[in-house]
Image (tube, rainbow, N blue to C red; front, side):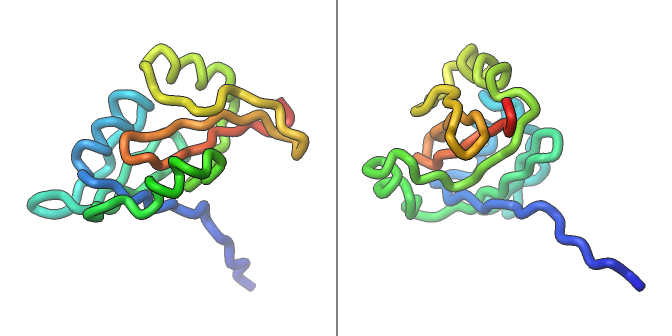
Length: 128
């Protein structure tokens, strides 16, 4: 009997320019650009270690206006082995981080990154 397994979900972030967004994730957050699709890319993928994010070009990022008013609107969460070390790495890169590492009552320590399109990504370590 075969056991069916689910694999990690891949969030799709809405961005204004896939090429520029992929460059941000690569140069500032240490992700690798897996692919850019389209003659003028409108879809792409970036990854780092086991984390993967897809980027989808839209005329206006749907969540950016809401995210500006709602500071805890997180569009993806990525688990990391050491969020404090990762925070320091991103800090050296000058990344916008609306939340510093914070020990949460639900058992994790997390911080938030805001990309140039207003997408907020949470990086978390459980039991840290």
